[in-house]
Length: 108
Image (cartoon, rainbow, N blue to C red; front, side):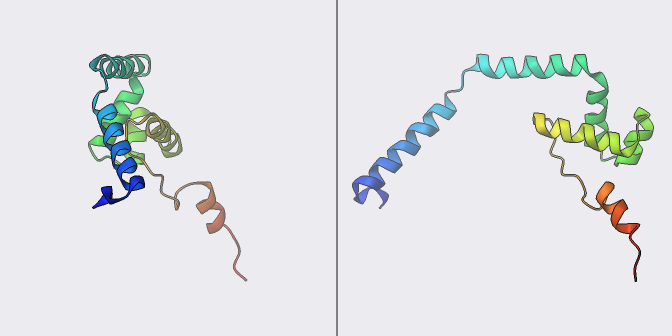
């Protein structure tokens, strides 16, 4: 159905080619990614602990107590791990500076 017109045929062939290229990622590249992850966690072992605690389901305060960090520092490190692709983390907008400032506002 997509290939009834030239544009449709071109689009379908383009996406088939892109899929082939994506599946053809060499094992050497995947091995290097694993090696880089290992090197990162060897250089920053506290990040590995943080990741392990997060995967256990602990909250920011609990992780902070275990790592001797405040919840804000734990959140910052989780954001960095998220940026690197090690964990899915979306900070809670109700926690942090903006929420504290809003709660301190005077009501008239």
